[in-house]
Image (cartoon, rainbow, N blue to C red):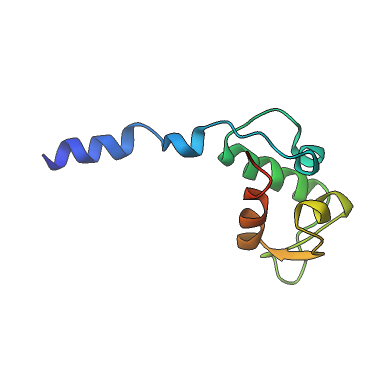
Length: 93
C-alpha cells in the first residue's frame, strides 16, 4: 500500500499550481498578459528581477522594486522574496 501512495506523489504535479492564472494589468507589464501557472509566474518574475538587477546586493533575499514592480508590490519599494510571492498572488485570477 505504501508503494501506491509513493507513486501518487511522484506522478502528477499539484493541479492547483499548474492551473493557468490570468495576471492583473500591473503584473502583465512585467511577465506578459498570457494566462500561465503560478510556478511559471514565479520563474518569469525571477528572470525579470535578475535581468534588471533588482536583487539587493547586500541582502540577496530582498527585492528592490522598479516602477513596474512597485505597482505589483502595493507601492512598497523593497520586499523579501517570501513577501513577493504573497503580494504577487493578489494579482492572479
